[in-house]
Image 1 (spheres, helix red, strand yellow):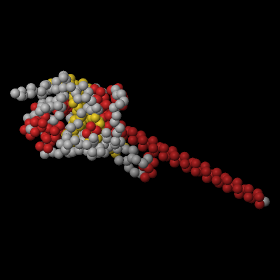
Image 2 (cartoon, helix red, strand yellow; image 1 turned 135 degrees about the horizontal axis):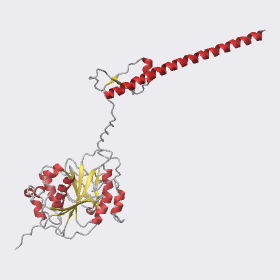
Image 3 (cartoon, one colour; image 1 turned 30 degrees about the horizontal axis):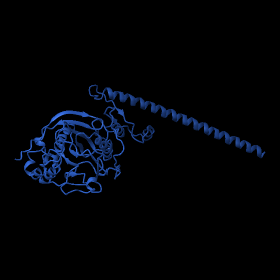
Image 4 (tube, one colour; image 1 turned 60 degrees about the horizontal axis):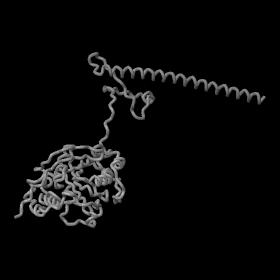
Length: 382
């Protein structure tokens, strides 16, 4: 008897649980269809409102107001709106597909993180332009380069006076392009080629380079470099400074020392403002020597000072070579140096004359061939 009563009790409990489950299922189905119908109705009104706002954004002529609803708030879903009863705010602005403008690049760091410091410079391995070009795929036609990830302070034209130094140029490009790219420099390289076999005039070619580079781009910094000088440390940054800059202060041919206090030869740099302040470089130094000292005098006479890197950083190796023909020492250089104060205002960028023959852009540099005339006849000594 007891077992029979226990069995009936369990049967009743099971039926009750089953009924509760069926009731729960029915309630869930009712709620589901109710929510679904509300969602379908809301989205219908949303689409109608959006289409109406596109076709009748003003809404004034017809007397009706059409809205579309912004449901794109972060971390908000439709269920949130339904549960809380939050009203949807209408927007009167039409949708557009404009892409966001790119963010401006940050300034390049004063000390770029990719610099390696002291470099091993050697000239024994054979060098070709093809090899140098493969090493520098990011350099564009004419020897131009701009850092892709930052905004440099200076736009630098690197100017090289040139004649019959093709082999030296290969080594210069091989070493300098990677250095300049690591330094995050926006630069262009200009080879100023003196045509003919008349007496070489380095300073006048540098004036030509300044003038021609400005026709190519809005440079505000100018580095003047001999083609046979290679920096031995990439921390010797090729840009302009508050004062005219002398970079090549410790050459191997001088025992890595400055030969004398007023030396300004090899590699130097001036901003456009500084260059114009000294009227550029002298045009009347024909042959080797003297023009660097004249430039140094121009700087000091105009109230500026020469800045230099640390002697451990400003080290250079020179490619050994014989002195060029038609570039013999200038016997008048000492007399001219003593008269810089009297000549600098009338002899310089303001008095420059030359004939442009050809401008040709190669993958690694821009070659500018010019005729700059001949030296005046020397006074006859009786």
